[in-house]
Length: 217
Ligand code: ATP
Ligand code: PRP
Image (cartoon, rainbow, N blue to C red; front, side, top):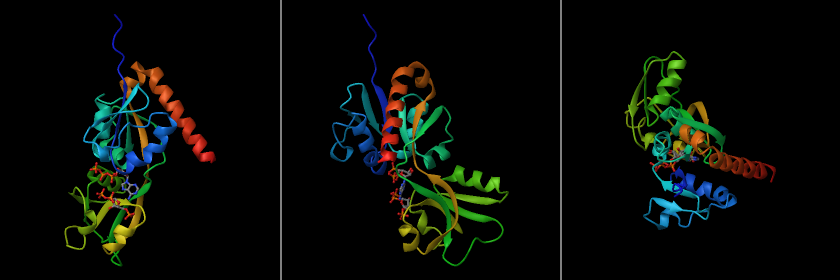
């Protein structure tokens, strides 16, 4: 009796990344059979009988892939920088969900001298960024609404993602340093890259081709 062939499993977060992945999934002939906004199911089959999606929180994608619960995943570079990337390959920039990770302060105040208090959900990134510049920082971990912290005296500065700049402006903040360009990356579990080499490489090849066609259009 032949061993059961397991589907390739891809971890992806709902919202922005899922929506921006849909055109690529369609080009791969792996469009999901349902949209996570219309279904409570966290495992979604796709048009491709050999490929399924796991719907997980954005910050959890690297964890599912690192431990092999998913073979592949789509994660923001911000999330990967914060996670550290252990157990993962990051072979492809999908060029979706693009933004900038930036350091911002209240408008007109500039970056204060001396020890800096920075509120962020990106604590590891922030520490690494400032350590590389020899600057002492105290990080305050937040889970959202970072843009509020300076105006209520919780922090001197924030590290957060910026796209249009609307959220910063609406809260009286301005960028003092752009830290990292962010986009979503396809990540692969290191063991799956070896054990499921053919199928993983096929997905990588098809993604690369679709991205090249898109870049030419
Ligand atoms: P979750 O809702 O799962 O807790 P989240 O709120 O970070 O996580 P999203 O807002 O969908 O989820 O963000 C997912 C990814 O999209 C981020 O990790 C980042 O890479 C990117 N991203 C976040 N905000 C923006 C933005 N304003 N413009 C473009 N890309 C963004
Ligand atoms: C993200 C990010 C910023 C905002 C920046 O939040 O955390 O707050 O987008 O985008 P902007 O420069 O275009 O205003 P999002 O809207 O995804 O909400 P979230 O905090 O719930 O993730």
